[in-house]
Image (cartoon, one colour):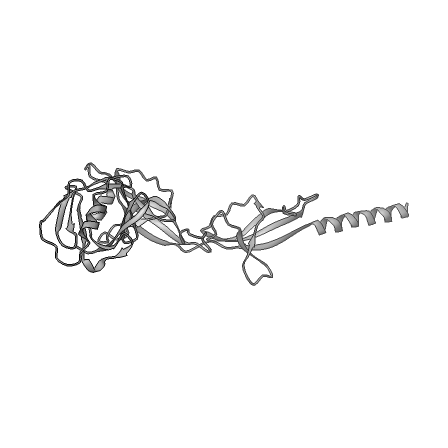
Length: 304
């Protein structure tokens, strides 16, 4: 009987030791600002640097706006699959949670998206961060904001800087705090791209791959009347313009009849503007023209 009790005690001790070796609880810190598609950045109790964590914490939902300290349990998995985690992690307790400091901004948003060039051809909102600013392209997404064309908006957002954002992605995350005002626009006008083009003078920088800024050719747009005017390096020209999606045309251009003495680019410029297969985009501070995907003209933004 004594011998049996001793064996039982030894067996239970062995089981307890094995269980202790297979399961352990520990504290871990989790860094804020990590995009959901990336591995969490963590520190263990004895860590100096942040390091990636590729497993999943059961019963824990990560919000990139917060820093966390968690008490978690790690359990060794039996017969773990090759190239799969060997442990299962479950949340015991959130011991600390603190909000990352975010910048609060007011935004005014125009009533139409416009064509723009980001990582590829895309549609952008036109926004102002101050009432007296010029409209600018906004390439990001605003979490919680339901945008519909045909309305202007005034909103308040939190802007949070992200740690290690994906390549070619924004360094910030925007979250809607409050919808201040939403106003329907009743006026019918040309696409918003035309309204943007009308705010500036567009100086010709490059034509058919050649630098031509010395010739002082330029374009001016009048979105209200659907017309353009400009100078070809010799004569002034004028006429209507039409924008549809990423296509643009300048039908029925008229010009002054000045004799053009010396070097000029007038004939080449008119050949581009009168093309029937003309496409455009607006990237950064340039207005670009294409014929069958060939980049034929670059105009630079300047004040009127």
